[in-house]
Amino acid sequence: MLPIGSIVYLREGTSKLMILNRGPILPSGETEGEGIWYDYSGCIYPQGLDPNNVFYFNEENIDKIVFEGFKDDEEERFQKIFHDRLEENKANIKKGTVTGPME
Image 1 (cartoon, one colour):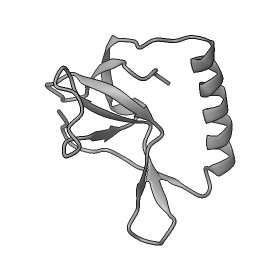
Image 2: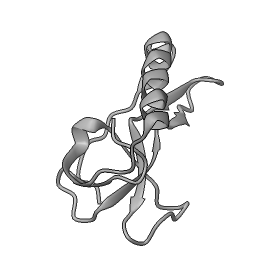
Image 3: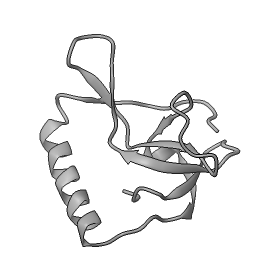
């Protein structure tokens, strides 16, 4: 799992994306309270966050890591807690898939 602030290219992508979030959950629209999660959300770099232009993607969509964001003890602790909670809730939340070209 990459830290927030990491810069990546996605497969078939033409723009750099900066990771804004890990594990975002979007409403699935099927049933109240259900959601679909992705590994990351990101924005176009260097423009930054545009609420109308947020990208959701997974590890397998990353083609190249240009820059890896800041890591410290808190980041390592967060990743452990995140993975533990993910394992506990895997049955309740579907993982989203990304197909086709992205920025």
